[in-house]
Length: 558
Image (cartoon, rainbow, N blue to C red; front, side, top):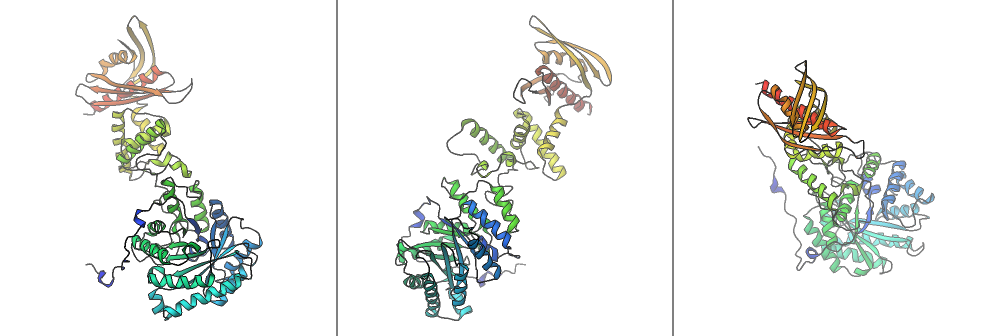
């Protein structure tokens, strides 16, 4: 019995925005990125990072290319304060990187924040207070004017302390927290009041951060709010509009992208979307989305494994195997039709080398983020011939004939289904060897000799047949035809070779050859064999013997 009462919820009211422009825009450049892993991400952890872990992650974020990094809430705890001091005192902040610190609009917290920043060459002071209808009424029990007064007073304190330092060394960021739950006209009003105090200019801009502290609507409504705000805020050329989306509805990435279409120039987020509740916007996904469209993300994602490892080590959280772009399984196909399409796409890409990447089911080249092609296709009971043949070719060099691919894929599917598990490349190879080579009964060839006279080929061989040594002799238009004729007397039915292929397994004069033979009996039933040897005649003869033995075994079982 369903007990979910959907009627106690109501839809978020849309903004009555006429002639909206953002749906017709296209993202062409990366935003200003600000990592909040060390603050927002850190405060959401069951066990916050210690000083050593924060330092490791800070250095890695710098290495990735972040130019703005929110390093903490220095007034919140001694650990936070010490971390900021260590960065400054040990001169660990590169010249082109600006640290950011968070503070509430309260005098003692602001003053403590500035103490932490003593000696910093440049810093963003991120001032915030909650402005939403719900927070005003339930938490603070203050009206609009009283909430605005808090923001204005906090800004005055920040400005007074900033004026004691070198001009431009302190950049103000103001966030009307819970912007998505705030009347948009009131958000404009309170931000204008803050800017009236700060007095930014086009040369010394302030940052207005419009957070979806709680994701309350579809991303298009958030984009409407951003566009409306940008159109109505005075002094637009003196501010940078920033967004900080949370993922309560699972669309933080989409909300950030649509906000960029609507005029946002700056994006705050975290690696893998770590953060309060369902998390923040995932900068990995956002950046790689740009990359996949031919836009420089201005962040280095070239070593996906290193990003995952530093995150696991210091944040101590896992990364989903289905995470976009960097998850363990995102370049893996189990479905047979997908595997076949990927194989064909990869073959064409390697052969034709087109200007643009175009491979079915793979939006980017895995090699661009440090992944190899090896794990693209993995094999289980859902796999098809394309995937199985891809593994055999790319791991071991076997290029199976198409009809053989079909038969072998059924064998692999049944094996995986029986075991109820994925099969490794080595297991697939071992099954191939078991099924098609080294089949020594009933016929086991010991040695052979091929002679040529005019247009006729004669083969003479010594073999063990059902455990008894016997001499074989046959003539034909080639060694395979001659051996077929020699084996005819030992076959329960007549048969013929209907398909033969061979190729080299390696490069060079000492390379081995692999031969594939398909026999067909008088009833139309097919049997495959393979042979591997440095001598092409021997590999083809082995393939024939293996296929013949499979046929005899199958027929004598009946």
